[in-house]
Length: 178
Image (cartoon, rainbow, N blue to C red; front, side, top):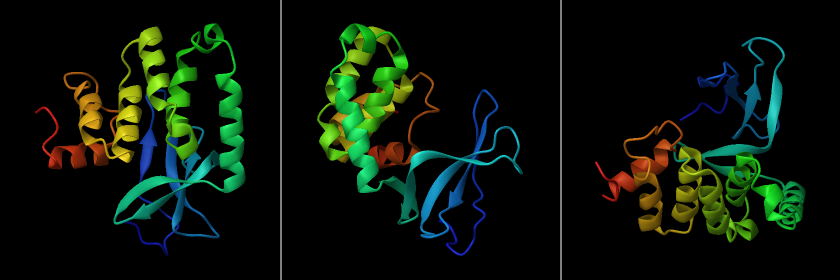
């Protein structure tokens, strides 16, 4: 997919709010890729965003490469959030949404994905991003039927948030509604 010798990666993402992001190579381990926020400019004020690096395998960006200390800190923070009263957690739709996303980063947190997904849907309704992340959770657990159920919930709705590789793999298995 990418030339490991090149520092330039031909990928740019612009959000609906005009924020511009691109991929960069890790200087120490060039097979790892990170995300840069350009703050509106493609040539200055670069800020590395995130705790993680992505890696490429078989021409696909997969997973998140986290060091053990950061995973431990994430798990610790996650557990602290779980102890907060439900009334506080459900106030902002970002809370459960981010918590479902972070369950993808750790096998220890994965067990919370379904419950957090259900709480999000009860409190905030449909979200393509939530459906995508719970579908990835089930796909990672090799429960392809459940993954396809959540991807299929986005049919006839905004599907811009779906992971295209997930969609392709589920379609190849004949599990998606056309």
